[in-house]
Length: 284
Image (cartoon, rainbow, N blue to C red; front, side):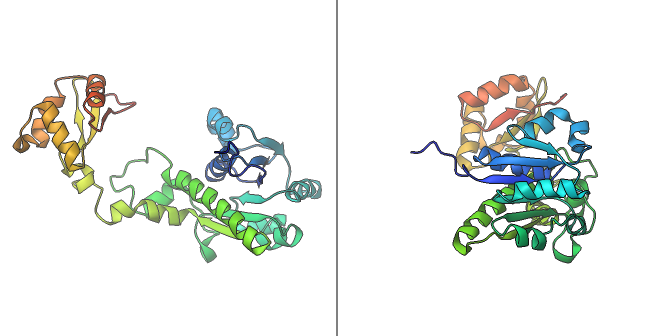
């Protein structure tokens, strides 16, 4: 057993702002990579939106504020890229070309660098504008018309980008030079919408509340999320509650869960090996 992190000795350079890129780079840093993040003089918008989250995503990184639009700034980035292994971007291809930071330009100057470009849409559509909200909406993930509770496309895109960076390093070891990987966020929306597209989730679907043992219930105080999906969990739930199989209905379980607070039910569930938790941040 070794305590060495898998990406120890790997140097990552990022010019990505907002969420997907920084979250991907944070993941690479957690795996042991050293990181230099290059930000515009005005900083990252996340610093204004939610400073604490920005700090969390950039912990332990070297931050440089550089104007990439002037020659001096581009020269500074070139110096950093000269000793880099991975370069992460989240800009449109045309913007990267103007800055001389597109794959062809970077590879010609720094052939050892693996470049991971996070884009909205793949290939020829990479210039199309978009954000997490539009990707989710376009993939049918907002059928109820509500705003998403989290930025699932951005964050899954970050995990994909980190995986692509690791894969690129493996390819470099085999090929002897850096490679480029593209991460279209619209592809992640398609991936994340799989359960919806196949009718597994959504109103009235199997994992959308149709199963009594996989649903959310009102408690005396708050609400509980029950996920006794497998037969042994269902059997254990009914035995622990003293219910017969025919009582496994939404109506009967709702009556039972209304007898205690969500916090009490969570303790009870731990004691009886039932997959149930109180709904966090819920007003009831």
